[in-house]
Length: 105
Image 1 (tube, rainbow, N blue to C red):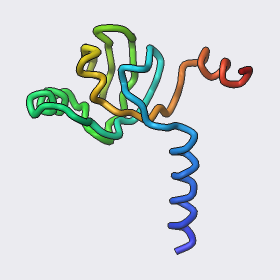
Image 2: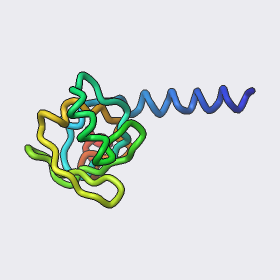
Image 3: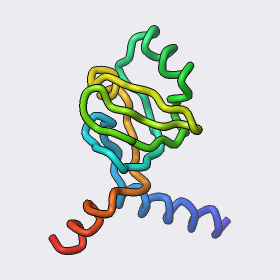
């Protein structure tokens, strides 16, 4: 029972350190887990699912902008900013430049 509590506490700390945000807000080099896909049409949900972009999947942004290029399971996909705004992610690794800025800010 104590282990479960410790795991939840560790998870809460990790969640607080890496809040969720929209995929469209990030640029190249970010590695993240997909947390949710919100306010999307059924057609968009089907398109994203066919590409492996589902909650729980890990992705890497290869190029930011519009369209942005993401990699999921060794496959590369282009996403418009319009589609990316619906994908909520939790970054697990930021590019080195962002990590250095955070250290010296």
